[in-house]
Image (cartoon, rainbow, N blue to C red; front, side):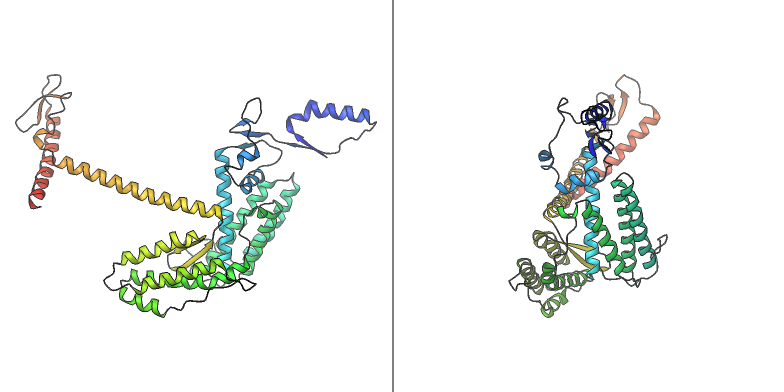
Length: 426
């Protein structure tokens, strides 16, 4: 078998076959030709003559190897593939969905995602059972095999995996809402998806956070205690029971920091342990006079600062316990960027609100008699109140237009009087 670019089908390969069979006196030189599609750069064929080529080394400066490989997996090998910003944005979306799925499955199997008290399905929500999930897994296996047998249709295989992820998420959602569902099918779905992603070479490049048993065993007890204390503190603050926070913190037991399998201190476990002790001590100092906003700020700093710097992300859910997830270096960088962007957006809105408020205050202090005086391009004469009587062309202001101007003048007069009274009261 020989693999070449699709533009070499004719006449290059026909010529190569003829020459090789004649030279070697063989009537079967190559049995199979695999013709790959062109690599396009922003819609144009990559070519040195066009000076639009990019090396793998250059591409790796912008995207991790995992996402570049995923780009190839999401395209059939025998059709043109476009390497562009839009294409890589799509890849990042798929990458994030897969990573989030593995994190959620891990949290679900660890028992972090406690069920709610409601057992009724939400309106319009598809019901989900163990049999349905198992049937979906079996169907996905069959169809993925067929996709591989159909000219290595990797994008179809990935589409099938994403559909299985959707069904599995729905199954876990039903379990969260109180349905008595077995966790074994979730493990089966996760294992099969991991198997196919391993075939694609994506797991080896760090797509899914492989179970770090040593880390989980060492960190989970103290991290669970920290999340429980934080959830309880936020609940009390929300209910206005600030006087009970010190007692809550005092009676909270702090588990010992876990150790590695070899018995050595586990660095992350000790860091989380220190964070729990510090958070507990801060809560002990809370009194009934403490603003509840201070407690929420303390909880947010723990989530967005202390723990995030350790590579641990907390996810707060309404009506459910907080879920923790361990982040890779890339995910940590993205999370920090997201938090910074959110903070900047809040600051931008605040600046815009302050600017508009300043403009309104300045406008309110404008004497209504000068409201239209500077509009000499529109008017040429005004009455004693400053309302225009003649336009710039020398025509009298129409009755309808005059009423509109008088209304604007009255509104400005009320704003101006209110501003003057406020200034006198200061």
